[in-house]
Image (cartoon, helix red, strand yellow):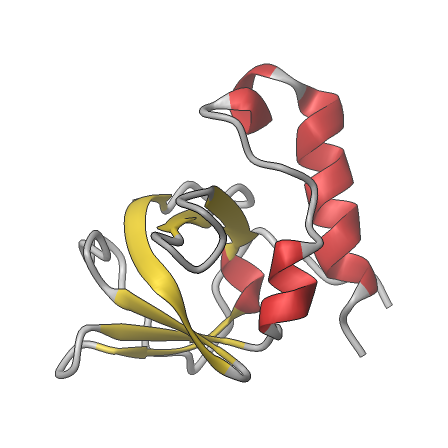
Length: 116
């Protein structure tokens, strides 16, 4: 089954033009940080999470398909990955995913392989 990890799931609560910046991000096993930026582009939607002290201030990129629920009341995003899975993802450096199609493919493959 070919799943597009770069699109928000139906029923997640995401809405077009919703500003997610500053939303808290909850992994399957706890808080990982806040949304620093995001993109809603069709077939390339993602969030960038500023992890703060959790992993020494590193930013991580999560494809929109990892988002299971958007809570606009509490300003929280819930993702279906654990902290360890997110921490083990290919390192995110600035806008590398935009400039380097290989990185974009690698991160999509990493998160896509975790589905199931």
